[in-house]
Amino acid sequence: MGRMKTVTLPLEGLTAYEFGSNVAGPFAGSILAELGARLIKVERPEGDDARVWGPPFAEDGTATIFHALNRNKRSITVDLKDPAALDALKRKIAADGDIVVQNMRPGAMRKLGLDSETLLALNPRIIVCNLHAFGASGPLKDRPGYDALMQAFGGIMSVTGEEGRPPVRCGISVIDMGTGMWCAIGILSALLRRGVTGKGGVVDAALFETAVQWMTFYSADMQVTGKSPTRHGSGVRGIAPYEAFECDDGYQIVAASNDRLFFKLADALGHPEWKSDPRFATNPQRDAHRVELKTMLTGIFLREPRSHWQTILDDAGVPSAPTQTTEEVLAHPQTIASGMMQKLAGYPLSLIGMPLQFDGNRPGLRSSAPALGEANDEILKTG
Image (cartoon, rainbow, N blue to C red; front, side):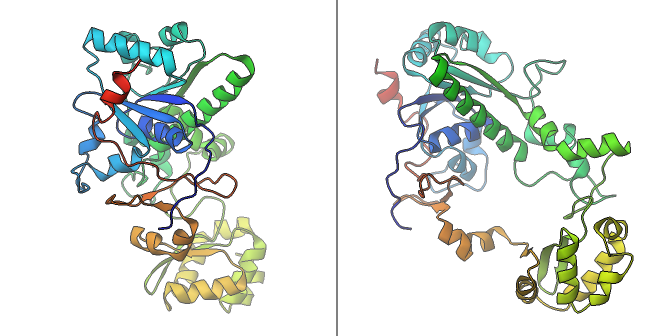
């Protein structure tokens, strides 16, 4: 990997404190760190649970998931049951903190005296972001929650997977990381407002609310049809063909999302008669006959490997892509050319960078995930 260019990052000069564990809070903090904030991760003496969420573990014995979510941060350990240590931390945050992001159990920050009201009284410019499970209000506001629970409770599992099969969780922590992104968006918006008013404030985000928000068009569908949406496997409701088709060596996604693209697909596959077939002439008709259409297309795609169909469809101007393994993604020339994979000298892992560039430069990997409490002397023993 080439050396990353030195870039002035948008949040340089700002200090953020993260009371985050597992995925959601640390992901929010990682975005702030990637954008240049001095991110101080406050951990219990035993550390973030995610440090031992393995196997697999990196060479230092820390779980790979912790490395992925906590790059570019500093770690301090504080016994929050110790009144003197807690008071010192509170004064430290009030003195130099710009941002606090937390996903502790409901009510925990208030019991510690680190809630938004207390911190804003000490420093009116501070921005406090609370990452809740169910929300800041409502009958479930005091309940804890996790990604899988919210994928179920928020309806996402009802539209994921194949009809008639058991519920399927999205393979990535889409609710945790999605909520972390909403936290970052809220914090950035509050910083912009602070630049005008000089005042900080409170940002609230919630796993459940993120799950509900992801259900946008399914919610609209249900209100119009009166029916709960169904599962479509790799496909999507209302568009056909727009799903994965089995080939000789794997699966290829074909996205003929309008009539023009379907007509190109029909010609490319040697079936121009499909264009005038009343079952397939328009998208609503293709959607109504999607099972028949999929059977016909699968019979064709099974004859050749994915690379063959990629070439055919590229030449025809029909969007398509092979379903790739993680190994294939990381080895692909596009991934390599993008510079998304970042590595520090002597560090055992390459980590995926931020999918943003500023003036043509991507924020780089400045430091690996911190050892537990590695910044105690530097941060806690300074004024």
